[in-house]
Each structure stands twice: as structure tokens, then as C-alpha cells.
Image 1 (tube, rainbow, N blue to C red):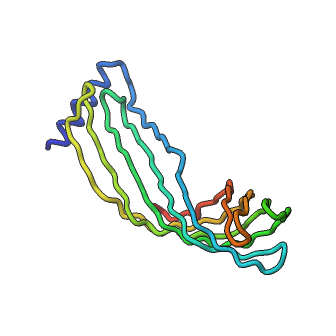
Image 2 (cartoon, rainbow, N blue to C red):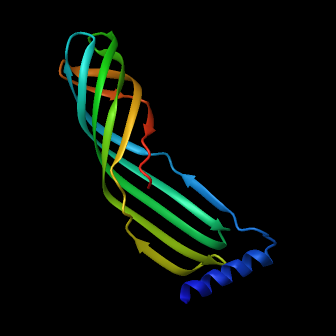
Length: 169
């Protein structure tokens, strides 16, 4: 009943404000990923990569208006295991330019959804809950630049194009 009262007040406030329909906005923040990669070189050009990665996804959903609506904030934290094949285009003493192609399995380790029912800028109701998030699989292609600090250790930047395989979540 408390939720129905809050929804009724929010709907009335939207009608008074002249909103004939209640809209839903979705804002996805830029994902944050950090990874540790290990590469086994098959030869001077080809290599096999694996490692661990941490991925943080954050989104906000607004139903209605910010001053009279429902604001949901969702966060998902993943630990992933990539499996890739890489090809070195340029292989110098200190610099490598390469491309990679492969798959990643990401395991959800924490997820949350907070819902705030807002009226006149104040929260009427607040809910916290965890989400049931499935494994996330993706296929990706990237081009990287690596600076070799030692012959066996380097720092890299690798922008990727990822296709996330649908999981019905």
C-alpha cells in the first residue's frame, strides 16, 4: 500500500507539471575495466593470452521526472577470464603494437539495485536489493599498444570492441 500511495503521488505530480505521459530515461556510465594479462608467445608474431579482469558497470534509470519519479541505480561488478589470440604487428625492444581476438567469461561477484521514489526532490520510499545476474560471455577484438618495462613485463592500453552474447537478463 505504501508503494501504491507513492506511485499515486508521483503520477499526480507529473500530471500537474503538464506531463501527459511518463517517460523512462536510461543512462549507462562508461564501463570501468582493469586487467592483468599473461601472454604465451608461440613465435615472434603470434601469442596466446589469458589473465584476470575486473569490470564495473553502472546505470541509472529514471521513470518520470527527477523531481517526481522513480530513480533506479544499478551496479554490477564482474571478475572475468579472457582467452585471446594476439598478433604482433610491430615488435620493438620497448614498444609493441598488436591486435587481439577472443572470448571472455565474466562472473558476477556483486550486484545491487537501489530504487528511490522521489516527490518534490525528497525520497518517499527507498529500496535496496541485490540482482540475480547470470554469467556474461563476450567476444571481442582489440588493438593494443604495449610499453615493455623489462623483456617479460610491460604496461598496455588496449581499446576493445566487445559483443556481449545475449543472456536474457
